[in-house]
Image (cartoon, rainbow, N blue to C red; front, side):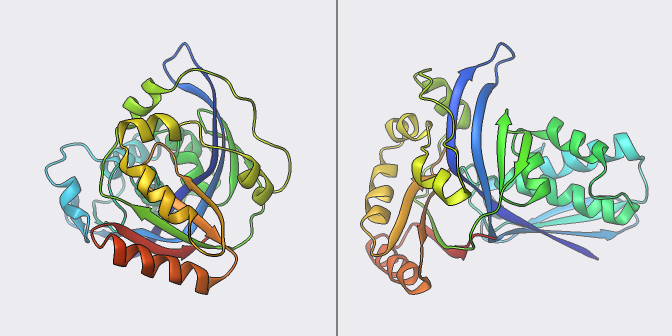
Length: 275
């Protein structure tokens, strides 16, 4: 059995610079990862299998095409079929929520298959497979704080402090394509220069205004996070609807989580930290 974590991805800042001719958008983003998320388990088997467990398994039920199986098939297309495997995705992150759940799952699958096949984790072919699966998958494959450019696949490592983080999702889905389509196409400038925390604090998420227009509940999430004691930064991640707050102290994060759970018991909250 091989176990690979698939931690949640955050965009601490996300600057959309232009829409490209290929339909993608030119981005500058600060990727970061937290200590918690989904888990991928792979085990040799007589025939291939794929199962989903966990509190958010139902959100993927009936999917004929999943990024995990696409990652498996793409890996085999490059490195050969190898032995059959059964893959279990333990799904603890909300689906389609701006924190890279599917991308993280695909990246964890690639890492696990590479371990089974004896492929080096820094093999350029593995990164190429990741880029073909989605814009966030290369960053999730690396699994550390990075500045991403292009579609997000051109990565530069940067150090980040292990701050306490609270993630909150109101249970409202927003489609990534719809959010990008609603972006006003105004280039508001590049990422700031500095260390990761300075970039986060001085940066922005250009997808936050269109996402808030499509899903006004995000306003309430950001209002509660922004009003929490000891919060350094409250922002939406990716195309939403998950939002995050950074804190200096664990006790402030815990107090904010308790207050939000009391006010909105149906919302998803995760107390974690930057990895």
